[in-house]
Image 1: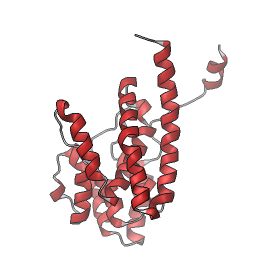
Image 2 (image 1 turned 90 degrees about the vertical axis):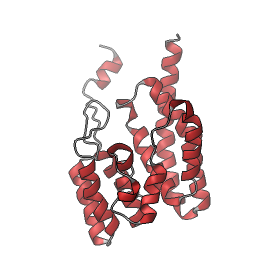
Image 3 (image 1 turned 60 degrees about the vertical axis):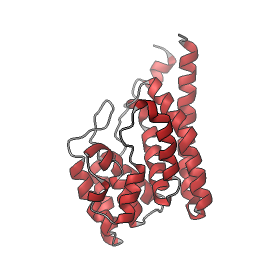
Length: 224
């Protein structure tokens, strides 16, 4: 047995970072204690719409784990505005559940945030141009930038269990080209978000650097 095999033989790797029931309860308690009506309405709505859906990965955990985790991340960073938390919960409902933004159980501002962060079905030939327009639209909305920042942070943190190598490389490139500049825009336009942006950027850069090194070394070892 090699040294690496010896050191890792007892490792157990799970896709699930936190339990859905615990996150749900935490968000519900916060919505009640801080009087957040949109968050209180969005929580059961998102859970119902994502019912039966699962995340990509070996364990196929319930999809609702993702918006719950994005919302709890916002709360842990001190972001507790009702509109932001509700948008975190609902950010994939239109994209994955066939719901129109205008039908969401929240106020117009929050509906617009969800609309901005939703990736609609784009023809592959137009993907590059549509991505430019997509991120440009998000850059004009504080709430949309926050939701996208937290959404991408969660997605890159667990993509090794869901993506093949080429998909990870594509996702890393998109993150560095569009999302990282978005974080800089958020911090500059809204200085009060500076601490949150720093913490998320630190987490994302750590994950991206590790994955880039792994993928680069794998590509060098297996040239086509």
